[in-house]
Amino acid sequence: MSRSRPYMKNDNAWVEQRNWTHVRKVVGYRRLDSDVELAILQELYGCFTIYKNFFQPTMKLAEKVRAGGKIQRKYDEPKTPYQRLMESGQISAAARKRLTAQYESLNVAQLRRQIEGLRNRLFHQLDNKNGAEPSAGKRHGPGIRVGGAAHAIWMRKMMKGEKP
Image (tube, rainbow, N blue to C red; front, side):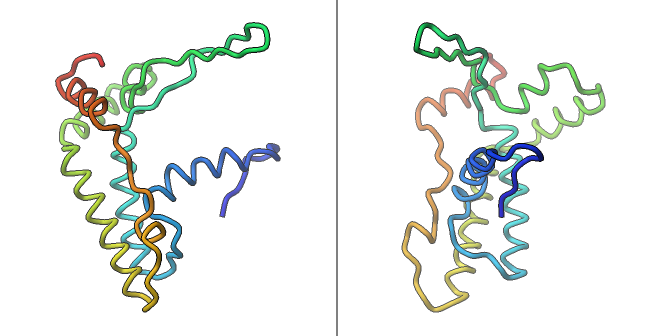
C-alpha cells in the first residue's frame, strides 16, 4: 500500500520510487503474510536501515541551472546520511556521541552477511510455504547492488576517516 502526502495528489511516483529502492530490491515481489515472515522482515529492515544510513552514500542535488532549453544539475559529493547529519551541526552533543559510538561499533561486512542471511531465511520460508516454485527473479529479487571497485575505494577511504 502506498499513500501520498496530504495535498500532493501527484506524489505517488515519489512514494513508489522509495518502495522500489527500500522494499522491492531487498525482498522482491512475493506476498509476505505470515507472522514468521513478519518477524524476519522486521529484523531485516532493522539491519537494512542501519546499512543504508551509515554505509550507503547518496548524492544530493546542490543546484539546477537553466541554460536556454537545457537544465544543468550540479550535485554535492556523495555522503551517507550519517555523514550529512554529523556535518549539519543540528544535533546535540549527546546524540552525536551516541551515533559516533554506534558507527564505530558497526562492521559493514558482518552487517552485509547478516542482511544476506536474513534474506535467505525469508526466501527459504517463502519457498517452503507453498509447493509452487516461483521464478528466480521473484524469489530472490534484484538484491542490494554495491558498486564494485569504486564502492570499495570509497568504503576504504571512509573507514580510514579520509574525505572521499
